[in-house]
Length: 174
Ligand code: NI
Picture 1 (tube, protein in one colour):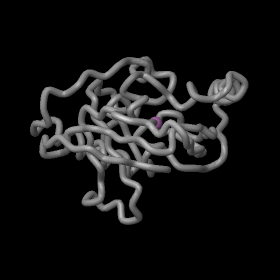
Picture 2: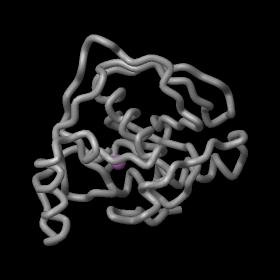
Picture 3: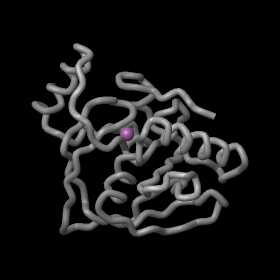
Picture 4: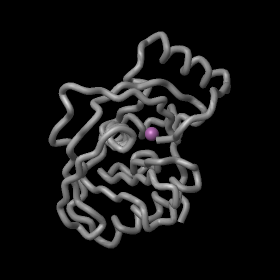
């Protein structure tokens, strides 16, 4: 089922999501609906906050196939380690800020702990775009947006464009 995507400046995007007690059938349903919604929006990642559900759930898929079997499902994701040395810079977009992009620099690698779709605890070491995507989605769970990571000048340019209903160039939607 497609879920309605909340777009900036929806108030829910600034709120902190709560952990799920466990990945039960209700959470699995949410994960599947979020993946379908993400595919439809041509995004590579989506956080539950973006569909107005304040639970710590994210989905992502960086594969070519994007057929549902390649989706990454995470509940209660927690970054255990961040690369202290190398960074990665990527032109980020967001389904909640459609049409707007900005270069964001984040740690190149992270190690993240989470519950998978079967409620099993897992750890994943991610780098480059996957790392960037997971960090972007976890930000959403904490009420964050990619525009928080850029200079005030660049942020003001985007906010002014949003006010005027203008959009920018194309890029990846996280
Ligand atoms: Ni986003």
